[in-house]
Length: 287
Image 1 (spheres, rainbow, N blue to C red):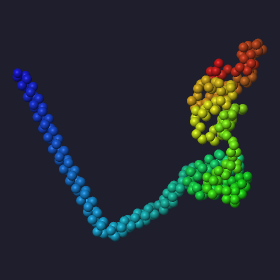
Image 2: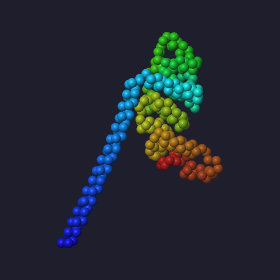
Image 3: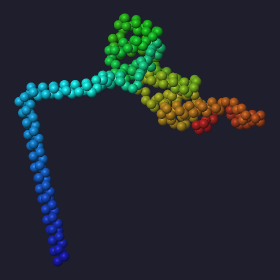
Image 4: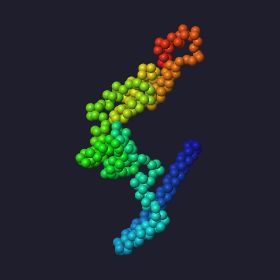
């Protein structure tokens, strides 16, 4: 019984202590809330005073603001008069560390020239109304003759009209299908030349996925290069191009005549018969 009574007393003591702690916390929260209310009232009073002052003398307030603005402006001009011009140049895009030259166009395929011209205008933030004027100063030979005739006839009134006119006159015919040309493209020389032709055609096709580009690129490679590269399952166009370069170098090295490694007796060896038959092994693991 005594043990049970002592346990009940301890529990009651713990409850009383918890109640006392809760009361202390409530009192502290009340004091904190009163302090915050006082601060809020002080801030509201200050705001009220400022509003009353502005409403009583708005003319003086505006005059003070103007005087302060003029003082700041005068100080800025005295500190560094060149800062204004510098900021204007930065806003226009001309105060950058890289100098870009506008590309010249004499005729031929206009797509690279149009792309570089648009990049130039974007970099220097050239307004659309000035783009035709700037482009005309960088046209020569056949392109300049065409521009003179077209401008006199009023062929284009905007930069977009100018681009369309250039593409129609110097670009491919409307019946040209770059997708068909890409699927029919085959490697006839080196891998580098093939990739250059491939990129020219693929850049003209909008929305072509990387997976489709990779498939078209692999299908146009020579068999002796395409099959070993496919076995390694490249995941991107760059991977396929790198593997094709390696296989091309290996094929070239195999086809070179052996100078001192073959003797007369080796003419009847299996290796020499393999080379004569044209069955070239692959460095990339093709059987």
